[in-house]
Length: 289
Image (cartoon, rainbow, N blue to C red; front, side, top):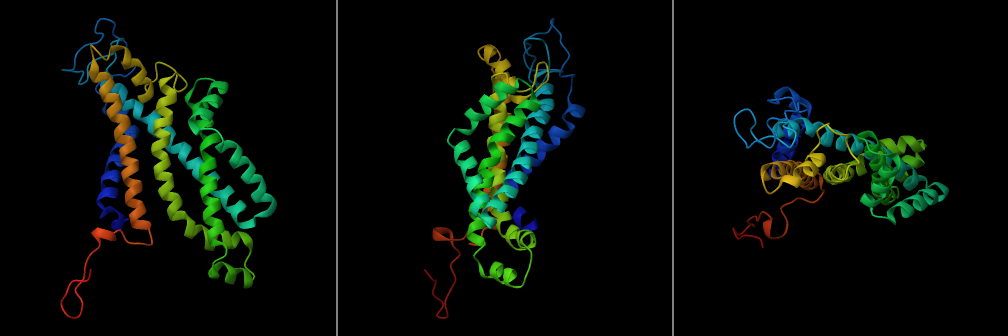
């Protein structure tokens, strides 16, 4: 962890993500107003005083709703990512190691689901299940595990023929012992990097589907729903729309930067390559090119 924090991209992304996660956990505590309180006598108020970002069309504090909405957006994205990573990793390991019938069945499912754009397929499933954050999470889980499984399967197939795996098999180690003790530690780093990248995609997906009404039910706060509520007033109260967009962009950028930094830290090859490599002096005092 200390080595990762020394990487500038990871440090920046980790700081942003940690701050947003803290807001998601404790946002309601620090919110200056009740995010659900309706005051029809103070609608569309400009920023200032007790309302740092003004109020919406129902007189609710925009700033408080964004703080409390972080829990719905980020919390659901992280929970979906945890499930898709765990389930996809399990399926990919089983299919990649055992092959044959298990691999064939998994490939059919993967190819079928990947034939459709993920967000469109999630939209269809969420529409069938109905509006609600839980239904939205189930729809995303049903779709996004496939990409994790495909990557885990590919990595497993590339590792299972390595000498240390063959040696473990020759020594009589069980299949699941080899999978958990030999293969999993080798494929976990790239899977973690991919998981961080996918978390940013899930944030966009949850915000997008909530924007069209398939996420949280009103009046619960959520960033995508806040975008939908603010778009009708972008001419008179642009801060409502801009603030919600900035929240989504910050969350996406945080996980993207963290993934980029992790990729460099966990990679076998060092980041100091090409024009950025560290040049050393040879025995004659000359710089190596």
